[in-house]
Image (cartoon, rainbow over all chains, first blue to last red; front, top):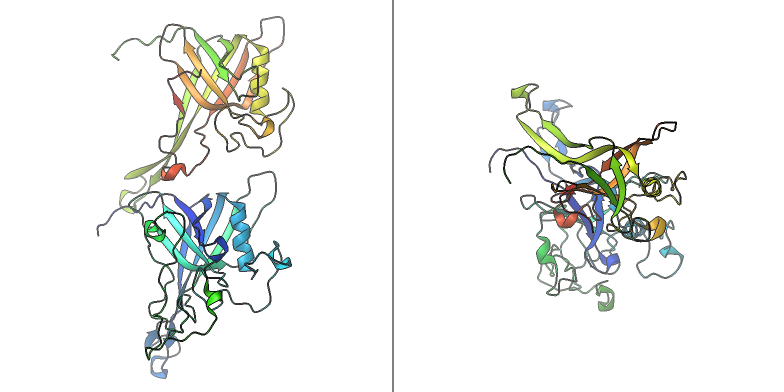
Length: 234
Length: 191
């Protein structure tokens, strides 16, 4: 650790997830710096002795993060896929809900209770790949679009205003079909993952990271709660 | 290379455009200038401020460069100049007409890539010394700002032309290198 100017250089934005068949896909380049904003949702513990404004202690709660970026050189098909997932669209490609601009069913969960990269999970895993070796690659395992997607349509080049929310998602069943204890402890909002270890030997298929709870509950029991066929990736 | 007087001498301006423009698809003479051709290179920088230094920056960042080339053509091929103009207007069909508003000049394709309106619209500008000095090649240029000033009268027409050179690349990510090693000019003629 040493004090210095901090220059992180340019980043390439990549995505993966079930909708992309777990392939790592380039989304694009941004016009300006990407803004990563962790949002800490800690809670005050109040006591009358301390008065109404200053807590005697603070409880940590789940943290989330917001990633803002203006894409300038991007793959529009990826944008549409991310948008469809954010709107709860199906991943099967059948029926009207596959179309752009069409909502999925009300109340559909983004994660679907299943691990990232599995059918039914609509979260997008977002990667910020640095060009410089001294910068860390950022990974946000579970993200989706929030607020609005600004799409200027005109003669000037379209700069896409994107805001993604990253949450510490954990599935209710893991990749072996068992139901683990759902604990916030250890849940990942972001990390600095080495992109090179995320691929199979052929370098073609993204391997979802094992960032989920252990495949057994607190009693060491394996619990199959959904049929095996629904756990197949993609 | 050694220290000496540098005499570029007479300089021929030649251009090369996209492959489906027969007139300039190979290196083609544009013409001779009335006087010196002016090359002005501009580098973009941002200062890093530290309060301890006040207004004098202790460090600086480099943010790319461009170049402008100004020449007054006196003995030139008007058809070639017209072709350069129409390409500089975003790939317009003819000189004096416009390309589409918002059209891209490089269009995400390689130098000289054909394709009509979807092709590459920059022009490669080559400056060739008659005295055997090293040539200048600006790989991606267009007539810009006030592209031409064309005097029409009893005296011979000396046409002022203003060119801008860009460090164009198909993919600005450039394999993670960004603008590193992207050429703005070199000393190798187009063929």
